[in-house]
Amino acid sequence: MNIIGAGQLSEEEIALKLTEGYRLVSYEYCLSFIVVTLKRPTSIYLVTPKDSDFGNRALFSSLSFFIGWWGIPWGPIYTVSTIYRNLSGGHDHSKALIDHVLAKNPSGPPALPPVYPASAVSGKTPGVALAALILGLASLVLFGPFTAVPAIICGHIALIQIKKDPAKKGRGMAVTGLIIGYAIMLFYAAIFIYIAQRADGISD
Image (tube, rainbow, N blue to C red; front, side, top):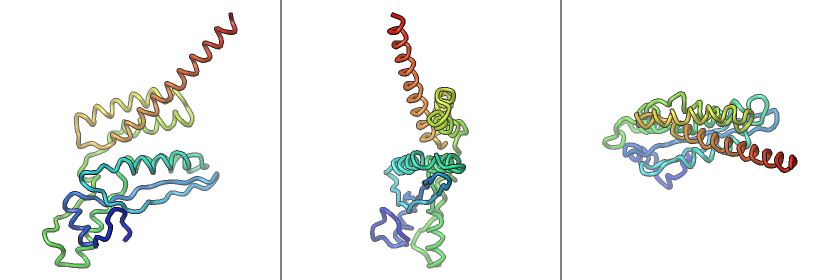
């Protein structure tokens, strides 16, 4: 099993790391070729308890956004689902490796407690966080300020909910929706100011 960040650790040594709060995570990305869209998993990464994997989530989500969404007809669908999966934490393989090691060595490594996927213990993702992300992407690709404003509203509501209940996930989605929403509004505001100034210059 090729695990990025594991170095020369054996499966048993990795399993012990998982009991200390490490995680095995893979992500998704999609590629579009006009009428063909491919969705692929990444390699598995060993994520330490002290390190955030948001960089990996953002990297593969951005990759999908720029080269995945424009395929017909599955590009937008795969892009949204891929970004949602990545920003929700990716695929957690920790329990699968634990089960594999225990099946191979019934006696197992010493003091090996059960490991559960991150999604089972870290709370649910608020629907408004996903809505903020989808509306933000829609404003960037199709609808401009018509969906940018709802993206901003949903993003703030999601952050309030997550602040009240830190166990909830989706902060990355909410922040991404907010950033895109505000960027779109600033872009259209700049265009409006430019047109207004041009109109004043012509009238004079």
